[in-house]
Length: 391
Image (cartoon, rainbow, N blue to C red):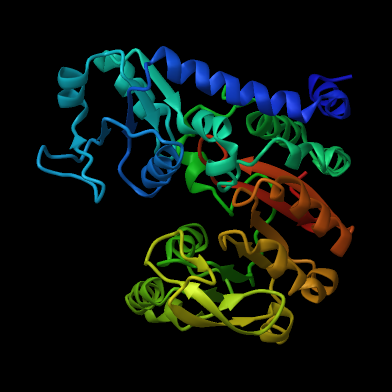
């Protein structure tokens, strides 16, 4: 029996409450050893999430550290943003640094090479403050995995190759134990750029019809065109954020006419129920449907909106809406069997619930898992019909 099987088979025997308390105690010990003197590396969206969690727990960081900082910058909470060199000089090497950026390998090495002695991933803090910090994207409380352990095992068994199985287990260990050994490592440029279009998993078609759900400003379309050039039939690019959509339109208009005439942009979201929903548009990759959103957008079901298109490749990166969107194209999946490239890192349970849903919608798929960034970011589930698998 492999190490992977041993880990998953052991989950029913573990006590999630004990593990939860261990994660809380580990964070408390780390914080106590640092005398509650924190700094946050990264003053972006994730850094602000860390700040909010700390303040909610009665803790106030000494400063932010950011490579783009100037000495005169502060946050709305009047917390200084310092360059790493300045922070080291002012605060000393033993201040606790919470890494609060995506893809942490390089900044971790940078900070340690400068002389900071205490550098930890913010996920450890999140796990140590579950009541105020979780859930956050792929991170959640331990009971989420334990309550789904049968589905976790079932999804693991769907993985079609050893690389997928190893990654699946590494992601489970990351969620449970904050085990970074197999996920905290730099991804090659080739692996990053192959996201949604890995050359070793499925065959491209000369008449490929790509449905890009969450097209952002055109980055996925650009990557597709760099691989396929003019060798495709059609691209349908869905982007609900009005700011992103304007950038997407601008990008497509600048393409050669023989290319842009085959690309249709749609200022819509995708889901399982067609209609209007509130939406938070901020012109970033984190735009999403939200009851607090100030915009109203149109949601369509792909089974209805794309009934005439016969998609051969569907990509979804829609900030946690992937399950609904898959239900909304179950007929396309069942009858046309397009290749599916579905992000599974926006919610912890998507790691196993997305593969299981795809299998239930159509059994004629081989399921793969690939990571295109560090930690839990950009983990994608690929469902490939058997006729397009690269053997």
